[in-house]
Amino acid sequence: MAGDQTNHDILEKAAKRLISLAEAAKVSGLSSSHLRYLVQRRIIWGQKIGRNWVTTEKAVREYKARGVRPGPKPRND
Image 1 (cartoon, one colour):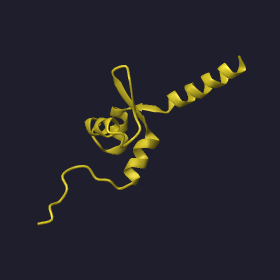
Image 2: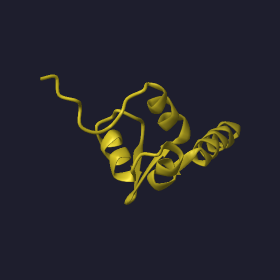
Image 3: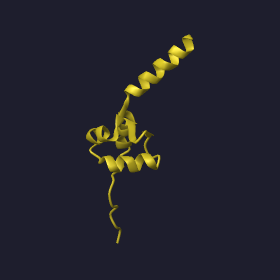
């Protein structure tokens, strides 16, 4: 049974790090719909739980640290 308690503790600790995409939008300055796009394309880590999408602040910060900027790319005419 000790292993079950350890697994429970690990899952509980991980769950506390999850944030909604709305919260992630506030942290990142990106829209929640753009974050959902990134998660669905596995550009950043995220998961759908029920009808809600979640990610971690760490995943969002790592994406932002890469310097990727959303939006149309400049044309090189």
